[in-house]
Length: 259
View 1: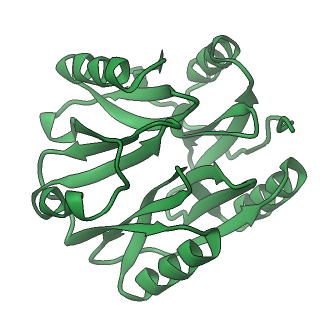
View 2: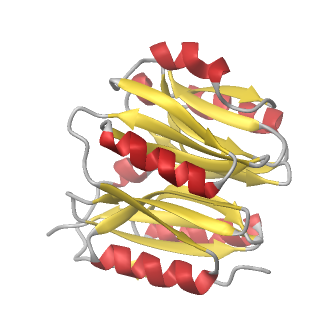
């Protein structure tokens, strides 16, 4: 079944943003190796990987222009299940994104350690993953990336000194996803991560201390997606999350606003 989502949004009073802060681009790759080369090329140009999602061997990546090299990532690719093999790198680097394209895992790291601690949560069922997320919340961790692939739900748990409130919800169809998202936005929450697996959407939300609006859109093909994304960029929105599921690419946009 193809997910049918109308573009929904939470809108606040707009504040003009310096166009230099909004420099973004995106790319479509049909293999992990092509995507890795693309990321490396963008890093050399001063762009950081902002979001990534994939399926059936394909990947869509969003990049944002950065002013400092500390925000630029390196990429690790593994066909094996994520877990212990990344423990050493987590001790010295910062894991920003994890994604799966239906064939391999993609891990994007910052080359320096920015937070107290990070760990990779891996579960075979969504119920087990939600239990692990709740357990790590109590220890001061917050979910900074989430993905599904090869029968595994995977989350990156990051430990913060003063963690803000975080929550999640799941949805098994488009109607429920829209209803729960609208309710979350009305409560001042904003999407920080989204993924799809085993017929369900998992959405991670942060309680927003800064006023900014969000919206999303879905498209079946990358060409249609790219055209619509360009329209949103012209309105000052940036891609902050990407997901692939139920036959569509789903993009979450965010835009800072005034109170």
